Amino acid sequence: MPEIKISLAGDLGSGKSTVGRLLAEKFGAQMYSTGTIQRELAEKMGMTTLELNKYSETHPEIDGMIDDGLRTLNERKISVVIDSRMAWHFVPSSFSVYMSADPAVAAARIMNAGRSSEPFSGIDEAIRSIAARRKSEQARYMQLYGVDIMDMKNYDFVIDTSEIPPELVAERIAAAYEKSGKGGAK
Image (tube, rainbow, N blue to C red; front, side):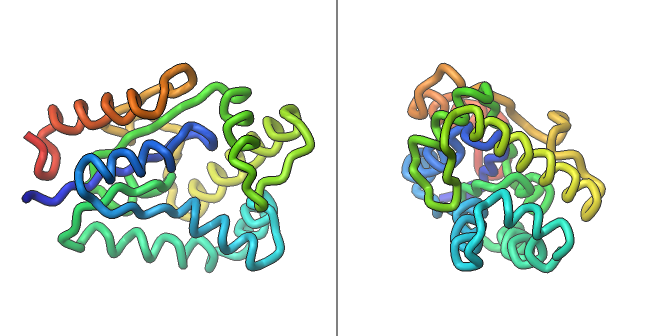
């Protein structure tokens, strides 16, 4: 079986983790999530994910730890679905996808997930925190790597997940991947 590498980047709350699990199951691939790694690190450090992002602005070793893990995926002969805003950059052999979502929809999804590292008192606070986190990440990745994670030219496929169930998002990504001819796709 040919190796499959699909990277999912996108807006916070766009469904990357859920869709990633569905794609990994469909293709019999491993799942690799830098978001999970970041949330676990934030929790260990007693921070929210936004606080960890702000901390990372002056502590590049945090990004270095996460990015080193991504770099190794490009060379490994494995099938993997990667949930990471920077995988398109560090794993250029992957079929790169950008998943967008309306800010209010994304905020509701994150609040419903009940993650302890992302506590919000209401939808407005969640929207503000998500926007601040995105701004922090965008500035940090531009400074560290000279790349704009919001430039859609970086991605092979872009999809708005606001009004589409995860199963349909996964189907559309799988179809686009299979048409792309990237990796083992035909």
